Length: 165
Image (cartoon, rainbow, N blue to C red; front, top):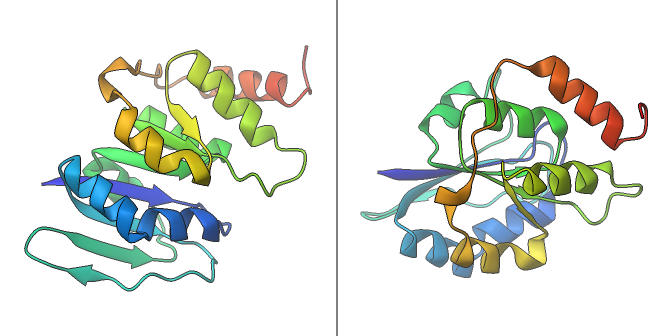
């Protein structure tokens, strides 16, 4: 059983939740062989109705103490572009699609997503391009992120947001 996991972290990203829970997105995931979609919706106001059929299950929750179990079970992670969520997914060796929230001002998330994509660790998109990316991406092209180097990630993040040269 293939599972996709969507996380928005501790924030709210209603556009992402609405996009990925839409019927055409669910159809794309089913066509890609996914049988389960788990949505971690944070404090958002969009709350899709969970369901289960013979061929597909949609689970929804706001928060858990840890995302570790959901990340371990996921064959694909779709995440907001928060540094913590990106790092946690990459360290677990999971294929990652980062969806950048275009409504955020001074969006350092976009810079982070672009750089990690440039290095081959993830794919990134916006809500409007997510469906197309899901249909065209080749997860086998992604490179593993070297685990256990949070200081390098921290230095990289400082450089991206302009705190270090």
